[in-house]
Length: 270
Image (cartoon, rainbow, N blue to C red; front, side, top):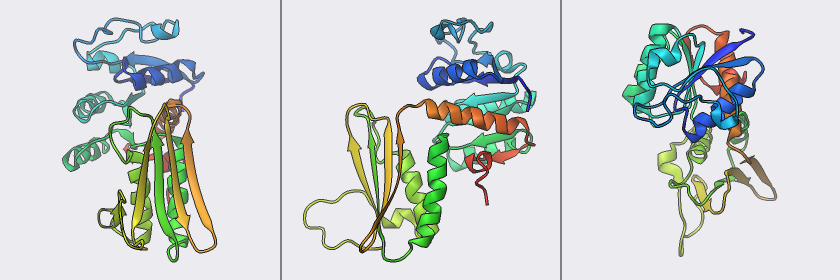
């Protein structure tokens, strides 16, 4: 890995963009080489590190080639259409990419796979190191606790979150269902009310809590007869996603073209 990894940030004036910029600026082995934003953004032309009381020597731009010039890696937490446009220029310039954007459809994922034949791309719906370790633990637990245990997934987030269950909770459910040879679409239960009858042992239950400023808590409960196993992850700050992204960027710096995920970054791939 280069002693001075040059990183460009997409969506640089957004909340996640600013967290990424702060992480890069404060990392001794990284340099902020570019900052991208949408045409018409009031942040264009400003120093992306100004909100930190620092100067980076660059300006926020909507010109993709200008923002990516000289970058080793782009970190992108934007929208599917924007990310694909960024990847097209990354391929042209030979810039690798860390993608935290979600919501891609099958055709868009195929496009990303095609780009990955030419540049290194690391894509994951959750960049938290802890969450990705928990996902692997859940796979192991579900395979071992495949009989006699009822499975419930409980998640809590702040009052402003608009979707439920959370994407991470659903990902946990997918991991558990796959390990058990089930289809989550067929076995998930998202709510209970009234006289529901006895619990179907083949189901995976979800419970959602919304309140206050909870960043994100997730617990998967394996409830057996005489014992309970709980695997939990609690986020106290979104900075964990930025730090996971930097870890992914460092990983890409020394890897060939291909499509990678956080299991590869963390050495958890089978």
